[in-house]
Length: 142
Length: 159
Image (cartoon, rainbow over all chains, first blue to last red; front, side, top):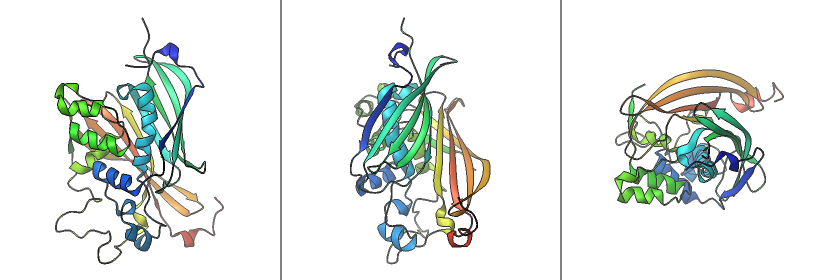
């Protein structure tokens, strides 16, 4: 079910911690499920010695996937029309990520009202790791 | 590029949802009852990598893998690039039971001089269509590869 139009206000926000103390095992879990086995994300020896990073880091798409939960829990997966992000900084094991979604506008789309959203995901130091936008279909109550 | 076939399976969707911390009971319900046709997480189509025979970031039997074993492995030139942006447009929800085909084409490419030297951005567009040929998801991915070594370019420009 879509969120009714009259229950959404421009400027309204939802904030949610989507992961606390990110574990390396969750990064491995994402590698297995997504099929992206880039060793930068699961192979400490490779990440440090061969690639020169301080250690393994999360797939950007894991952060995007976790960010998307705020949208889907609010509007329902079937109502998403658009979802896009920029990856701003790396996410490391041990990070805690907080997502904020803000209703920037309520527009009328081809098939009814649409909520236009901005997204911001920060780590425990307040550093932006992902920013983005999304659009979700709203319901008009009879 | 060849067309990839992505069968959207309830079990695969459940493991993907778990990996991103999405514990919606609908994924489990879809395992028990195919009529549930659960809607996929919004980033699920990325898992089409599993069904791309030529996908480079998966070890393959009989082929050299660049990650560590006895040695530390070998980093690719330019670090193999990083994911800069990802955008999805949903024409309809992706559901368990869908069989999607994915066709990828190159998009724009541009350069930007940053603190770390010259950065080359490349866009790829992937269209996911259902068995009837109708567009389901359009994905736009932007990758970035440093074109010049950091040390060679860092002295030239400010930002």
